[in-house]
Length: 425
RNA sequence: GGAGAGGUGGCGGAGUCCGGUUGAACGUGCCUGACUCGAAAUCAGGUGUACUCGCAAGGGUACCGUGGGUUCGAAUCCCACCCUCUCCGCCA
Image (cartoon, rainbow, N blue to C red):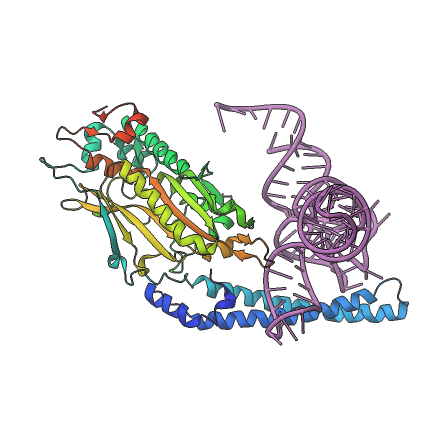
């Protein structure tokens, strides 16, 4: 969330960032709500001060008559305090509702517009020129008996799947490859829980565009299945005060991700492209405010390094303001070339790196203690996908397929699989 | 899952039975100053977080696992929940 104290000062800036995002939010209502809270807080403080004053004189060593007087006054103030507390609580709810509608600021260089208005930063690798008609991952998977969507649907539901045969090993190999690179880049590896307390999930899942929940909840518990290890990694340091020397803090997490993905699978999201459960290696970083942009670039570099190792052509885009999540100040996506996507191949999102500045940190209460400074400040948080298994499998199969339907494995992956290609079951 | 014990400031650890001037004894760590050529030891002072008022200096309020309740007043009493430890059971 935004700093309620900066609302009035930065009002025009906030209005502008909402405009660029295409979000309608009542900034002035938030300003007013904050002022209401501050006024009530002051009022309550004063009442408490008076109450405390009477209390210290209503104690044993004072003469009984005087004592009675102060106790009586305290009794009277009790109602006033209760009333002020009630009004303050209401005002705080109003403020927090108002704040929930306000997304983060946007980076001045982020392209303004909707989903299609991204800026392409670069292309790496060249899509192959096939001398045969390339298949999509579903057809390849069928030939090689890699997936079972029917069993997934039967046992669990639509958009669930089984991996089979070489795909099982491939899933492990991809995770390990990504993990090894992430560790080499200085991230501390974690294997995280796949569930988290609702309260923790809520401190990440800010959706200013309505309660379109993406999250599965577990009945009769206060647990949700996580949509990303961002939650379980970032949550580790909730409420923490980090020493300046401890930053940047780089975490790498491996977890399953669960997303309800309401709506039926269309042509753009067939097969493994959009599924309810998948395995992902995630990166998360806490930095000093002045370091977050460099860290953002770093996360992107690691993501690119992984796709280069996999010899998959991709492009990097600077996501348009209208397509940023509420917490993101700026977001870079890596889109891999998928020969089986669309009519004759298309780019498909495989990773995403976001700089959330202090937006998440404020709710998570992750602060930074500067050496020598007495005032703590908020850290910046960033997250990036190292590797999401299903979409990577799509790109891998489709790009490295051979005329006979087998798959040539990139060199970097071969040691993890102990073979040079996937020939069949 | 069952039985028991417990969650207090950076750490250790009082206080909780018998509610009151306790943001919290004591110890330790840390910072500053004095002494010293320097260090140790010693002495003096300082040392949590958040909110709020204030240009500032500074003032005020809240916080003893979390959330409710009783009371003029709660770290202390009551209820619920979370977590940790020990023992038993169960399980990969």
